[in-house]
Image (tube, rainbow, N blue to C red):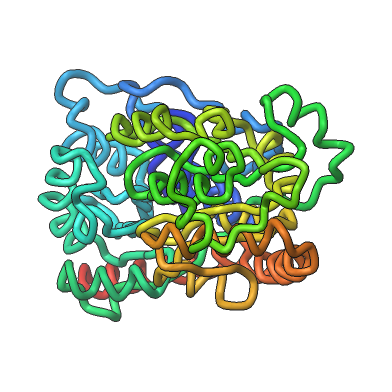
Amino acid sequence: MLIGLDAIPLTEPLTGVGHYTLELARAVASASPADEFELVYSSRYPQIDLARDGESLPPNLRAARVEVGLLGARWWLVGLPRHIRRRGFALFHGTNYEVPLRASCPTVLTIHDLSAYTHPATHLARRARRLRLRLPAMARAATHVITPTEAVRREACELLKLDPLKVSAIHEAPREGFRPLARAEAEATLKRLGVESDFLLFVGTIEPRKNLATLVGAFEQIDGEARDGVAGASKVSRAESRTSSRASSPQLVIAGQQGWLTRDLLARVEASPARSRIHFTGYVSDEDLRALYSTCLAFVYPSLYEGFGLPPLEAAACGAAVVASRIPAHLETLGEESALLVAPEDADALARALTELIEDESLRRRLAIAGVRRAAEFTWERAARQTLEVYARALKEWAAKNV
């Protein structure tokens, strides 16, 4: 049986959806060696290298860059449906919100989140409008829909008016390479990236939904230089900050590529009295991420909304103490025992949580142990088995409707 998956998320530096696509493709191919899996994309996109991270690939997984002309460049309407027919796909999996509206085989659609509906102001207006126009039709056309959490599954059923029996929640997982790394092994990476010994870490695409303005506000409350340079020490007392007892305040490291609508945040950072203690690394490799996750004082993820939230689980897998926003996805994935959860827009509460972690080594150790244990509960092998079950269900439903 030949199964196709959307490879377009792999044609640019990998972030959440790209990592999902590659890890799932590897895992389903490994779990079903009798089947063939093809990661498909149009020649309008650059060539991809599936072995870019040096890991071996299952022999039954390949990439296919499909040559398209002027008409075929209308990929979802013409180019992809034509390729599906020519190759004789048994099923196609749209890993990033899109499937052909008319296909000659059953289709499975992954909806990663519904922030374009719930938080439209955090997106470029044109992009959010396009998704809201297209996604309902895509979801109706798909034979089955996958979401990364039960939280998004409930939203999909409510906002897109989907039959709950048509939607399955399948948890994602940290990548296998994310495990604790000794500080001595990480030192060279930290030095190269300009990261100090004591630092707080955020990882993710820099865009409004990640709520970095609140993180900057919280950091100003605990940063010694900011406190010295700002009148109104009431902020410090509200945070009950005791970081002055340390030799120096930690650095705030923000790792990730710039996304969209970043002007206000960057202006906020430039004007911050803590500016000298805030360090942007840009996009970093998985190897560098592992070094950062493993050595930070705490990993901070104050996102307003997530469909799953891989970075906190990746950090936890590497032994980091995690502070994250109290939102449905984090409650489902991190739980109450393996992270400190705070209201996403409460800078004072975030500052208090960070101060507590900075000062309390035993708390950091307890969260680190609980986080490693929690992260181990999520595996791509299990995600692959559940995804293959969805494929089987979609094939059965398609066959019953097309007797």
